[in-house]
Amino acid sequence: MIELETPHGPARAHRHDVDAARALLVLGHGAGGGVTAPDLVGATKVANEAGVSVALVEQPYRVAGRRSQAPAKQLDAAWVAVVEQLRGEQPLLVGGRSAGARVACRTVAETGAIAVLCLAFPVHPPGRPEKSRLDELDAVSVPVLVVQGERDPFGMPPEAPGRTVAVVAGDHGLKSDRAAQAEAVRSWLGTVLPR
Image (cartoon, rainbow, N blue to C red; front, side, top):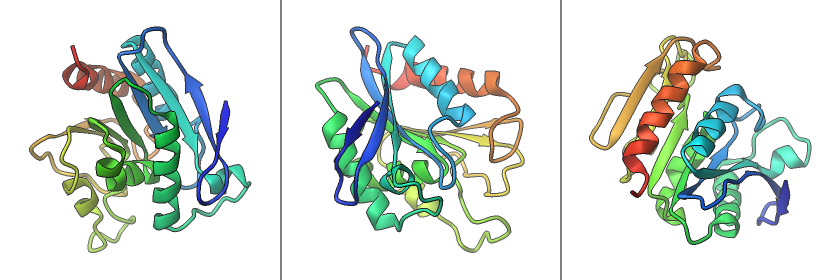
């Protein structure tokens, strides 16, 4: 684990490196959770098996011990600062779980990532489809994989050019079918990683 400075306090990166990595995948956590969420752990394992190093990033508000999420502008600025410090020569992929996926999507142009992995993207608040956040996904111009539980109360994003949606059993927690999640990530990595 390494501590990294950001404009909003220190963040932490939990490194899971592989030898001769083909790429680096940087993943952020959900609003109320941490980097030990099962879907983040599963994606890390699959990425490592594919020869990709992974950094799981704890946002400054979590490092400071706060449960409530910082405003979007702070999250985005801290994320960009962390990614800049982590990135090396290899291709960069970004993503995250829920709120972390939103941050990765909003900042993808700034980070220069070649692809985005979204685990349980929160399309809208539960029961509030009129408050859509689909524009954050639609604005991404690089390949995107969304792994979404079939009963996710935060909604289901549609497929779109450059965007693959893997629907798996379960809800927003993505705890029901880890094998299907792993296979979706494994297959997608095979399409976005440089040969």
